[in-house]
Image: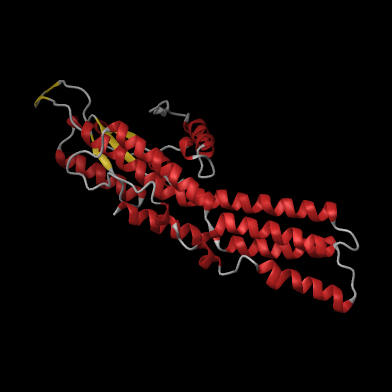
Length: 309
C-alpha cells in the first residue's frame, strides 16, 4: 500500500506570509470536494518543547487545519529536555490558545546524555496510534461533506442538462414531449441518487475499503485500543439512511404536481408556454432537492459515528 508523507519546510522569520500562502494552496488541492485519496489523513504539527513557548503563528496554523476539517495532533519534540510540569504547562497553553482539546504528544527521537542522565526514546507508539485514529476520524469529519458535495454536483449536472434540453428542443407545439422527457430524466435521476443512494453508497464503501486496507497493511489496531478493527464494508444496508424521507418529496413529483400544473395553465388560459417558464419550474425542483443536503450530511455523520462505537 502506497503512503504519502508531506513535510513542510520550517517557518522562518519574515517568511510567514509565504508559508501560509503555500498552505492555503495545498489545502485547496485537498478539500472535501476532492477524492479521499487526495486528503491529508493525519496532520502533525511539531513544536520544540525545548523552546518553552507557543508562538501566535503556531496557533493560527493549527486553527487553519481544524477549520479545514482536519484533526491536528501536536508533537512536542525534544520533550526529554523539559520536566513533567513544564510539559503540562505547554499542553495547557496550546489547548487554551486553540480553544479546544486536541491531541498533544510528547516525543524524544534520539538518545543523548543530559545533565540529569541519559535520555530514552519515547513517543513512537503513541504517534503510530494517533495516525491510525486520525485516519478514521478524518473519514468521519470529511466524508459526509464530500458525499454531499458530490451529490450537489450531480444535481447541478442534471439541472444543466435539463436546461440545455429545454433550450434546444422547446417549440410551440411539443410541450407534452418536453414534459415526458423531463419526467423520465427526473425519475431516473431520483431513483439512482436518492431512492437507491447509489453515488453515496459507492463513495462510502470505497472509502471504508481504503481504510480497511490501511488497517490491514499496518497490522492495526494495536493491543488494548478501543478503536474498531473491522468495518462492515459489504453490509450496504447499513447505509440505508432514508434519503427519500429526508427530502420528503415523491420521485414522481414532476408528474403529480409540477408539470400537470404547467399543462393545465396552458390548456385553460390559452397562454403560450415558453422555455423560461419551463426552466423556472425545474429550478424550483432543484432548489427543493438542495435544501435536503444538510440533513443528508447530518445522517451520514450519524451513521459513521455509530460505526465507530
